[in-house]
Image (cartoon, rainbow, N blue to C red; front, top):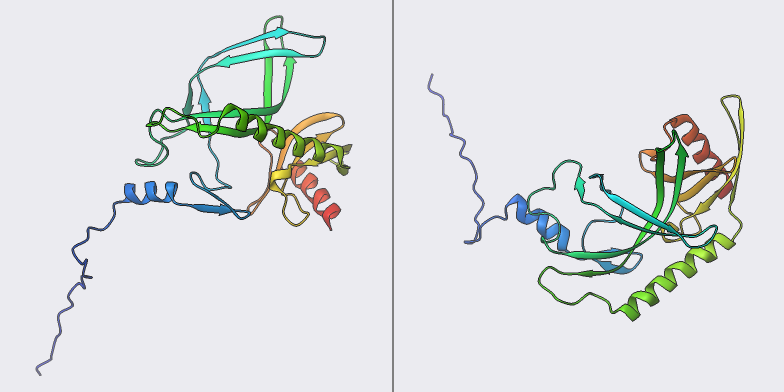
Length: 234
């Protein structure tokens, strides 16, 4: 018996003479395309994503100005954990000016050594493109942006914090959660600065995958804090 057979040919879509973009071109385009956050347009890394860096041995200098105030300076090279996708990010030579507001918790472990943990926020005041000789904002404008940021931060500090009262693993915890103003939507803040029993623990992140805190290793404690926050918002 004769059978009819049809050969399967790979369908090739017409390209109209245009070359399909490479993966590197796609990454570069994604980084530079305009995005929106709360109605504001921006480019660069998408809100919600994160970086991880390793810092070389650096030089931290500090000078005591008053009984409670110190002047600090720090200079070091930071290196990405892993490798950036080829074609991603800004060109070599790009510069940034950040303002950092942070907790620094230290503990003396011997005569000359301390453990050091920092957690807080950094706010971009300006950037300078690799092919430009000017910053994106003048010193006067940068100062205005900084004043606005600090005023909003102070206003949040002056509000009543989210109270925390937790019983966990046979221990009582009492403290507060201070919302990070820039993350709040419709009266709910997914990121809050946590203090328990007068000890600063860091920032609580309410993510799709659950609650996270960078410096707290006990996930059950983190979940207990997160549930207490959720109950308060209800």
